Image (cartoon, rainbow, N blue to C red; front, top):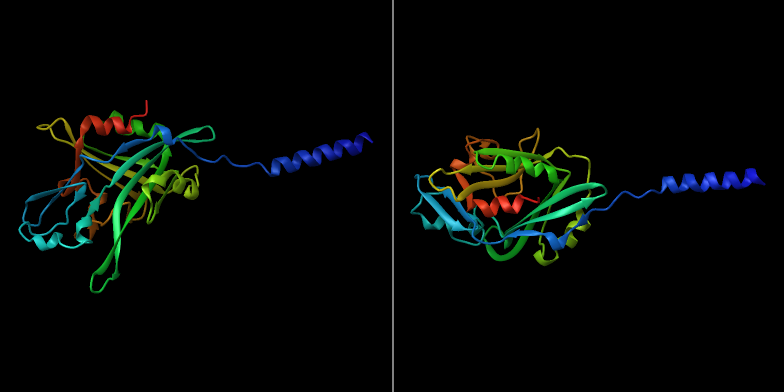
Length: 250
């Protein structure tokens, strides 16, 4: 009788081990950090003039040719930021961060004639270990490119920003690591110490694809996003202290 009871116990215990659940990510919505204003996008025109626009990096063309920026699609620029969000995220015993970049997007129902435009929003999200933010903070006063290994990443089309945390929960699959990097280009101006210049993208650690942006910028057939020269052509401008506070979770 004792042998039977022991066998039943061992069998039940084995089944319990088989059905162990992995942890689910916990997104701490109440602690989210937000940037949704006061970002200026800059690009240098083909004739060497710097052009700027609120929250948008303008398309590059001849500076006095206004047609370059006409139309709904062109108004999205080379890139744009509607909102940046940083969610503290818990995954089992791991403390993570989820960076979300919301961008204005859209499409023409009739692309050939560029008619019947529908506006949408695109979300690019990046999940990484919170301790990786030290790379960004520790080099706060130098021009640099910070590269952070991602544990999950993706894009979500036609998103409603008020429900972003729900979208993330429905799409996240946290892994020990991926082959994708969060890349943050940073530059400072000694003459304007209160400002920071930056651009954010996602890049494969081997292949050349660049993600998380509206439109790639190439020179001689190569993406400038993989070059230290990127910010000499395009960048965002923002308050330095506010930028570093956004990424500081201490």
